[in-house]
Length: 287
Length: 287
Image 1 (spheres, rainbow over the protein chains, first blue to last red):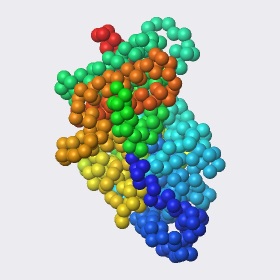
Image 2: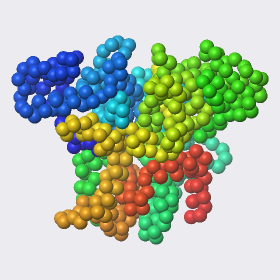
Image 3: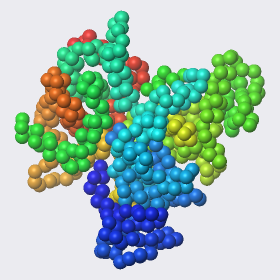
Image 4: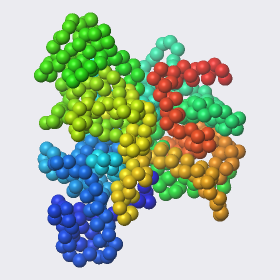
């Protein structure tokens, strides 16, 4: 995590098109990609910070319209939230404000996601690709990103559409493996609550309906994972047992109405404060 | 997962610009966005499949150059592998071949990632965004995606760059929370193997150096997770205990040289075959 990297440009902010300012009132105006001092700078450190931002902005390969693709990604789940375009000012604003900001091609203006909905995307890190013409805003959304109210803008599966008579809209969010599994487990829980089924329930439903069985399985799978180390079993066995631990633990999380995103949020907060090891150490002292 | 959706267009393949063919030899030629029959179709089902692909391709809002942004994402880890552009033929080829295919603007031609390196991206699902002008290829890469040999193309952190004298290239992959944590744990393991340290080792290193301690912690944390359900503890406690389970289990995985991606690969394979519940059931019968 780049928690330690977040301090560098914190004191900069973009006041208007092409201007980078400091909270202390110093304003820099960019003209032809060069900075012109509008008033004296507070310190050499400030000059250095502005210079570094300008160097960074210069390193981006903006296209003939001055744009680069900008992708907003959830730092915890990895979900691609939305994709827009950034120009120089949009990237500078994102760096200074830490709110994902884009250039709206339809309105020909800067646009900070959340400025009307309040669902900002709080940016923790920014990455350029190998060609320096594509940008990732890695951040945490305050709420649903899509203007439709959907968690992300990607909810139309091409392959689902090809199985139906028309382009299927809004049916299924693009999800990676862990979140597809989570979605299935939560769906099983909802089915139990809303329908009465005849026939033999699935294994997931049996676990959801029997807390003793579920907890005995979690303890058993954790033990089996440990034994892959203690008994020097092979890598494939360790991966398989960890899969069992994850799956059964996620069934418990579904019963507690806890999402993996909540768990990862906990880990990120501990991790970025070097708190994992501190927490572990406390646990050790307790035990 | 869309494992069940993968059969629909499997029998289609794109032979050349604007042509969609069937293995049986029937070739369709697209002219002005309409399909013209070049020979008789094998069945009404084939006609329907081609028609659905065309409807889908028609639904994309291609820009004035006939392009849309296409983002390749690792289906297991969520890592954004690369970003390119797709035209109509690139998307049609990706649908039929299930290999991520783009339109190279510099070479003005279709380009299937891996056609020279053999590092294909095997596409399991494709998503459109709410505006239908941005595409996700959700897939599994055969090897490193970037032409530099990097796992993904996004390895230049803007915020790291702002802390150094120049734009930092290749220093750190864009990683979400789980993989940042994994990277740290693997780094601690490497430090143990390569350096002799004085002073008190970190908690992670103590776990790595003491398998008895590590396994007792994993069993203890699994038990504490179960007790959040058994003792009806709050959601925050469940998320926190699951964080502990994940972290300690990942230390064990590092000792076994197993990545979370391997674990998720196992889960996806079971899951897409509805095998999770089958596996669980087998486990139950054993115990």
